[in-house]
Length: 177
Length: 140
Image 1 (tube, rainbow over the protein chains, first blue to last red):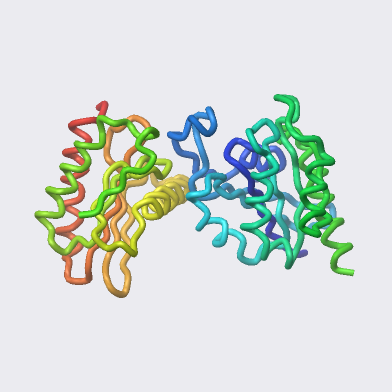
Image 2: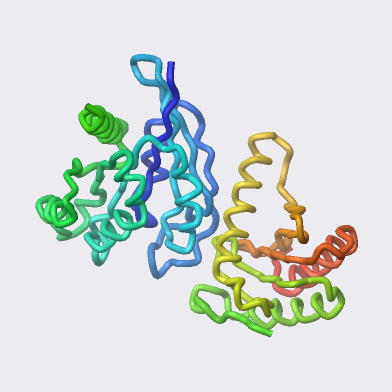
């Protein structure tokens, strides 16, 4: 049996805490505090340190799920949480003003982890407005010579989040060959 | 004295003068304090005393929020009731992180002091400072 660490990151309100809660077998440890940045997102609370949950795979391996704070002033937590991680899940809220810029910010800030391991992109809130199409996400990745899986997901749905994780593991296996 | 005015739109403006006055008084009474910041529970600076330009009040605020957020989660996991203060003893000084009582939405105080400070005195002064602010802007 092995244990792996996967990081969930993305903008505030993209669904990181929700996604971890959707699949975690253990009660999620969260560090939510009242949200003052209501101009950025209207949600009542925001993650200030980390979320933590875990899930056991069919082969008995345990995946530890760490969620980062989304807001950039907490970027010191991104490096702390990334240490020893096996891979990265980037959640992008497609209803925000510039989702592709959001994606680029996380690609830049987690460039080291992505190069060493791998990443998968989950696009959320696709039903909330005319955001960019998936092709545009792939274009951004290609411009950076990155070939990463991109999926539209509902972070509340366990099956969607599991699909994202399975895709990440397939990517990591293929990259290891 | 350097004070940060960032993200004031995200901060209850009535808190700012109360917190600034409390900080001035705390620093005057405790000369071993090197820096102190009042911050919202999600890490926006409300008032700051940070004379050393190498220390960022914004970063200090965000880190205070993370540390106290994590402390709260840890205390909850350990089933120890409510989380109070965090004390960090470092090679060259001490850091105290506290919550101001009874403030809706949450207000935190982070204080950095040199190694000469007596931790008991510092803790007492900081708790008094938080209580004063809590009395003025809190909702008991």
